[in-house]
Image (tube, rainbow, N blue to C red):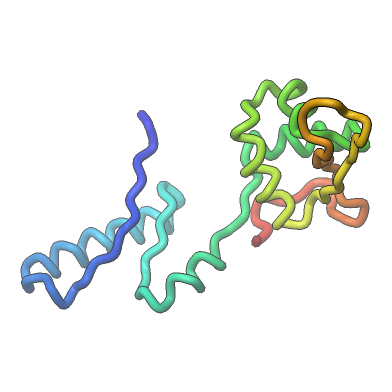
Length: 142
């Protein structure tokens, strides 16, 4: 079954008491399911939204683990290298690399090809951070 997403705001002051009760019950159910690890859910007051986003936990997904395993084998790798070695789509690699960068597990450098006639003259290359942990735990925060 495909994933379903919801993003929105609820102005509880504009709801009838019955509707407000139903919404609060639904939110309580979502929070309980999130606590059990069944869904990802962020619920709070609008002024707390930024703080809630900062509290999201970083997890090592199978795709991120594939990237880390590849970078353990190679000194440096580009997005194209990662795509060809893992079979992942280029469009799914970027967000995973960004998450790994923010978590401090990898680092990025720019490689330049000034003699190249066509295409980009620069490209990013990634590697494991030398001082980073060798096998990150899934519970590390980001």
